[in-house]
Image (tube, rainbow, N blue to C red; front, side, top):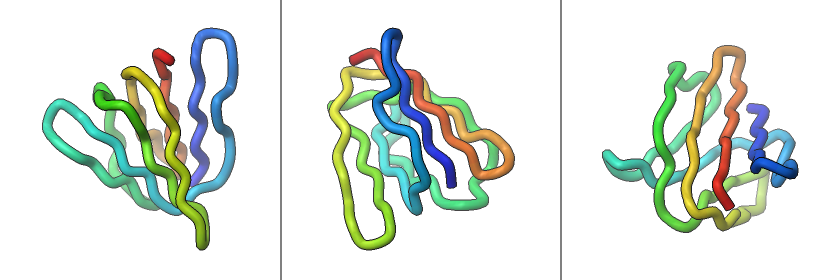
Length: 79
Protein backbone atom coordinates (compact mmCIF):
# COMPACT_ATOMS: atom_id res chain seq x y z
CA UNK A 1 0.00 0.00 0.00
CA UNK A 2 1.10 3.57 -0.53
CA UNK A 3 1.89 5.55 2.63
CA UNK A 4 2.43 9.29 2.81
CA UNK A 5 3.39 11.01 6.07
CA UNK A 6 3.31 14.79 5.91
CA UNK A 7 3.93 17.65 8.32
CA UNK A 8 3.18 21.31 7.71
CA UNK A 9 6.44 22.03 5.95
CA UNK A 10 7.68 18.71 4.62
CA UNK A 11 7.13 15.16 3.44
CA UNK A 12 8.38 12.81 6.16
CA UNK A 13 7.82 9.57 4.24
CA UNK A 14 6.33 8.61 0.90
CA UNK A 15 6.50 5.06 -0.41
CA UNK A 16 5.19 1.51 -0.54
CA UNK A 17 4.81 -0.39 2.75
CA UNK A 18 3.37 -3.74 3.80
CA UNK A 19 2.22 -2.86 7.32
CA UNK A 20 1.63 0.23 9.49
CA UNK A 21 1.37 0.04 13.28
CA UNK A 22 0.18 3.10 15.23
CA UNK A 23 -1.31 4.00 18.60
CA UNK A 24 -4.82 5.51 18.60
CA UNK A 25 -7.11 6.62 21.46
CA UNK A 26 -8.76 3.16 21.27
CA UNK A 27 -5.47 1.24 21.30
CA UNK A 28 -2.96 -0.06 18.79
CA UNK A 29 -4.00 -0.39 15.16
CA UNK A 30 -2.35 -2.39 12.38
CA UNK A 31 -3.13 -1.38 8.81
CA UNK A 32 -2.59 -3.93 6.03
CA UNK A 33 -3.52 -4.00 2.33
CA UNK A 34 -7.28 -3.99 1.85
CA UNK A 35 -8.06 -2.26 5.18
CA UNK A 36 -11.47 -0.60 5.34
CA UNK A 37 -11.54 3.21 5.04
CA UNK A 38 -10.86 4.85 8.39
CA UNK A 39 -9.96 8.19 9.95
CA UNK A 40 -8.49 8.26 13.45
CA UNK A 41 -6.27 10.32 15.69
CA UNK A 42 -2.73 9.01 16.15
CA UNK A 43 -1.18 9.40 19.56
CA UNK A 44 2.03 8.23 21.09
CA UNK A 45 5.55 8.87 19.99
CA UNK A 46 6.02 6.65 16.96
CA UNK A 47 4.62 4.88 13.95
CA UNK A 48 6.12 1.58 12.85
CA UNK A 49 6.23 0.83 9.14
CA UNK A 50 7.30 -2.47 7.66
CA UNK A 51 8.65 -2.85 4.14
CA UNK A 52 9.50 -6.32 2.81
CA UNK A 53 12.23 -7.43 5.23
CA UNK A 54 12.85 -4.27 7.26
CA UNK A 55 11.04 -2.29 9.93
CA UNK A 56 11.36 1.44 10.54
CA UNK A 57 10.12 3.73 13.32
CA UNK A 58 9.04 7.27 12.58
CA UNK A 59 8.81 9.58 15.57
CA UNK A 60 5.99 12.12 15.82
CA UNK A 61 4.01 13.93 18.49
CA UNK A 62 0.53 13.18 17.20
CA UNK A 63 -1.52 13.42 14.05
CA UNK A 64 -4.40 12.14 11.96
CA UNK A 65 -4.32 8.82 10.08
CA UNK A 66 -6.61 8.27 7.10
CA UNK A 67 -6.97 4.94 5.32
CA UNK A 68 -8.30 5.68 1.84
CA UNK A 69 -9.72 3.32 -0.77
CA UNK A 70 -7.27 1.81 -3.25
CA UNK A 71 -4.69 0.92 -0.53
CA UNK A 72 -3.58 4.46 0.26
CA UNK A 73 -2.80 5.76 3.76
CA UNK A 74 -2.12 9.39 4.63
CA UNK A 75 -0.86 10.60 7.99
CA UNK A 76 -0.90 14.32 8.76
CA UNK A 77 1.67 14.64 11.53
CA UNK A 78 2.40 17.24 14.16
CA UNK A 79 6.16 16.75 14.57
